[in-house]
Image (tube, rainbow, N blue to C red; front, side, top):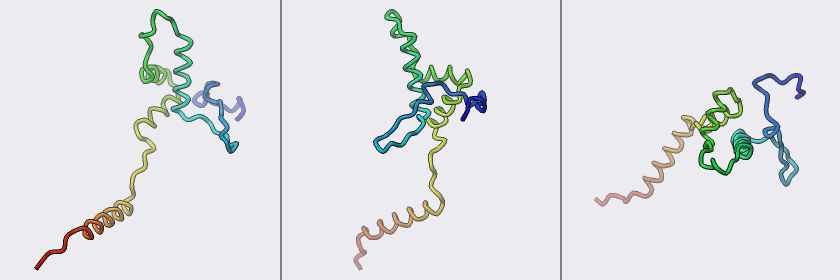
Length: 114
């Protein structure tokens, strides 16, 4: 993507764009969680004073301030934390699991004595 085609909502800081190479040589963009945590640590390092060590914002407090400012990465991070991408079982999968559980239960039951 060239800088000319980047919109305001797609603007990402330099720390977010850093990519890492794994042992196979594959490269990928940092996840929202990693990007937010890196920026929070950088913010702490910039604002570090010995007299006010306990007055730092927690990660969540800092992220809420960034969210109010309209940060898209932080918005994605909160969405991920709330379970936006959690998968749900399909109806067929639920039925198959229930049938397998019932069959297991039946095989473990003691036979009735007449």
